[in-house]
Image (tube, rainbow, N blue to C red; front, side, top):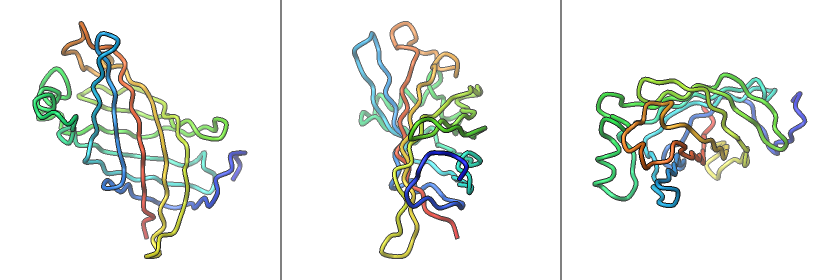
Length: 178
């Protein structure tokens, strides 16, 4: 590794995101104090870890309709036009464009596409560990976070009272492919 970041147990290779054990969560605020929290259950993606972590990449696809806030009426509203418009735009995608060292972690730059808009975003990423399970399967875990602009991505409904920024947090579990 050419980076100074130490990652115990680091394993280069191709990893597949395990949706059942991963969490893609968001937090939006309205009027500065009211919070809407939710998750997306249906995610798939690939993490390609190179010998030099700075040469690594990630791509992911989230199904918009898998949004869950725990409130069915709110979920229906957020899946409609003006918010995620899940029927017209069924997927949210992220494709990394670069990785940089940042203290004990990394910054992963990439393109996030929501609705028909693509925005440059940076994920603050922290590798949590690499382990081999009892069944011999290699597992990698990562935490990441970012903030996105709702308006820049075309989410306009309710913009008079919903803050423009939505916080995104990811807890990713990936299984080594092959």
